[in-house]
Amino acid sequence: MHQPTDEQTAAAEAFHDGQHLAIQAGAGTGKTTTLTLLASGTPRRGRYLAYNRATATDASTRFPPTVTCTTAHSLAYRALGHRYRHRLNAPRRPAWKTGQDLGITTTVRIGPHDITPRTLSHTVTGTISRFCHSADPVITRRHVPALRGLDDPDLHTELAHTVLPYANLAWKDLQDPDQGRTRFDHDHYLKIWALTRPRIDCDYLLLDEAQDTNPLVEQVFLHQKDHAQLVMVGDSAQAIYGWRGAQDVMTGFNGTHLTLSRSFRFGPALAHEANRWLTAAGTPLRLTGTDTIPTTLDTPGTPNAVLCRTNVGAMTEILGLLGTGHRTALVGGGAPLRAIALAARDLKVGRRTTHPELVLFPTWGTVQDYAAHDPSGGDLQPFVDLIDRHGTDDILDAVDHLHDEAGAQVTVSTAHKAKGREWPNVKIADDFHPPKDTDQRDENGNPVPGPIDTAEARLAYVAITRARHHLNRGSLNWIDHHPDTGARPSPVGADLPRPCSRVCPANGSVS
Image (tube, rainbow, N blue to C red):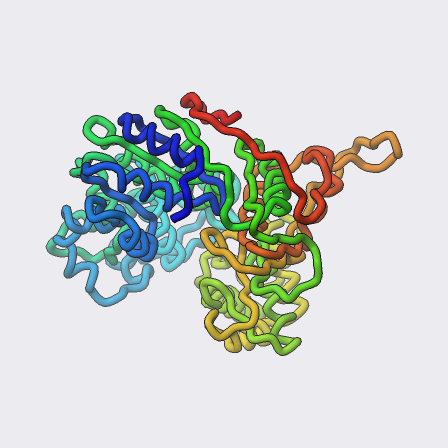
């Protein structure tokens, strides 16, 4: 381990003083190293909570034996989830079969659409999933997922009125450990456990990736404050999963706020570029790179990874790379792309699909019309363009020719799935777009760009900070010309000033 930085030393001192801590750890700043530093200096018993098992397993090799590394699901399983073992191991059951067992057997008319029993069953299953990720004690209409084509609030209210009785029946069924008809999964026992307001036996509790914690785990974590010292670590600027229910619990945490700002992943030039996106995201964090790591921007080089804004962008990159003979991998695999391409193929020949994104559309033409003209369908337009340009068969063939990452020359990923990863040489794909111009003009008569969306700035920050030695900024180089982000990029290898940081009040401000 390297000599602790002043920031890491400050965190260790605050921890040993018994303070509850929220540690803002920028990209590559050694958050796990810092947590092990805290734990190594005390004989007290600690627990480390990670989002997934792989992270917890890796952490267990780095922490002292006084710390138990686990996931929230693992804690819940040991407490009561094991009672549902036979339900977890039961044969897989499709949602439509579960719906049939709940009494969903007839088509329901909502607005201009006929909602089939299969679609209604999928919606009930989705409602239970959203409820299980929330901190709410009961299921309400806000847990009912929206369906494309039922975007009007009144139509969604009508949908919820139909769905909620079945969802409550399903939840009652899921709580029975001995028998039940609804398919049981790991999020169900986690929710049942959380509703008991569990006490986690430890002297201190470490929560990793706190900026992406779902409300359920946040509630469990905060309930330990009466008997355990709480330490959360993460990067609020990397909070990119709000669309699936995650929320940044760090900035409002009632405790001492500290910062880790020196990145050990990349050099000063990339740190400076990251700071421009941090400015755009409205976060006070600023990074300093490591002088001994050579990192360049926009110089020629073959990428190890291409990072995309969307799944459609990823598919476009895959088609291009395979067409030029590159062995190509896709982070997370091609199953989601295959599923939506198969759905499009069904619609093109007049067959209905069960894909949740397209289930209410009878034909491909109705999808094209919805994407082109409905305000709620704009996000489908790139996918429609991809299908219309390449055809479903070419996309399915490309998915079949993907390699494992270990055998690939280039790995393609969305920025979301690249989070937590790093590569020596990263290229940003062509599907990141600048804000639309406003109606205003500058002194030269040029249109003034609109403000940068903070969520988009956070995603861009995540994407560019996956690189260690070289970054091709690709479609994110528009930041050079946007008035909200300050100076243009620094010269490669420039010696940039180090930001300072100090222990901050509970509002999370950093100076």
